[in-house]
Image (tube, rainbow, N blue to C red; front, side, top):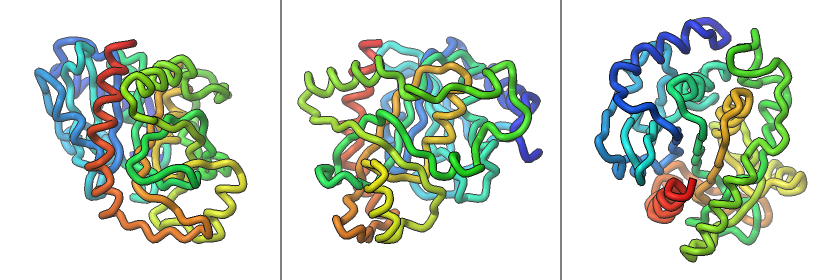
Amino acid sequence: MTDFLSLQQINSAVNFIKPYIEVQPEIGLILGSGLGELAEAIENQVVISTHDIPNWPQSTVKGHKGSLVIGQLEGKNVIVLQGRTHFYEGHNISQLGLPVRVMHKLGIKTLILTNAAGGINSTFTPGDIMLITDHIGLLTMTGTNPLLGPNLDEFGPRFPDMSHLYTPELIDIAEKISDDLGLNVKKGVYVYLSGPSFETAAEIRFLRAIGADAVGMSTVPEAIVARHGGLRILGISGISNQVAQDGTNLATHEEVLEAGKIIVPKLSMLIKAFLQKI
């Protein structure tokens, strides 16, 4: 596998998946830690193990199943990734964009990204849902960007605009649904770090000072690739733990997965209603 994601790698994966698809998907979903159960609601499922797909980066983390699920959800044709991969697992960051590129070539126009995140905003509590209004990609800002290497002109320009990366119209729809359903969804800025170590107290104080509301180890590379390709994007964080005011973060991955059991019912309700509206 080359250092940079190539069109040949993307096309090989697309050609492997195409025979399994009877109806072109409209919407892609990537599910974060502990949130994979949402895919169980998909009707007329076709399930493909990502281990069988050429060039697909494999997840090694508990709570990331490693399946691509194709079918219908709330009357929409969807393609859902259960089990994303992360930079900290040793993948080249360029390869993290392959699932998004493949979904794009298979026909999606809208991408919903979900993750489990730590709550930095003092008003957040575990079990909350946050709509991502913007992000701070500390890794992607400092030289580790999924668009490094030769530009894939078929998808987008060499220097893509990242303002309003998370589609305002979709955020407004999700917020209105939240109000109607009484979900009390929050909004905020997600900050992306490489992981796998959780943050020090000083790092949390820094992240809070620069305007972050939640912190995690995923989503941003996928969002950048999706924006480069012109996809509409809705980002949703499930707040799995609350970081103390002094910056203390005693979270464990097991706690993140446990919090997913609280978050999934609310997230499922929100996404299902969202799919009905768009």
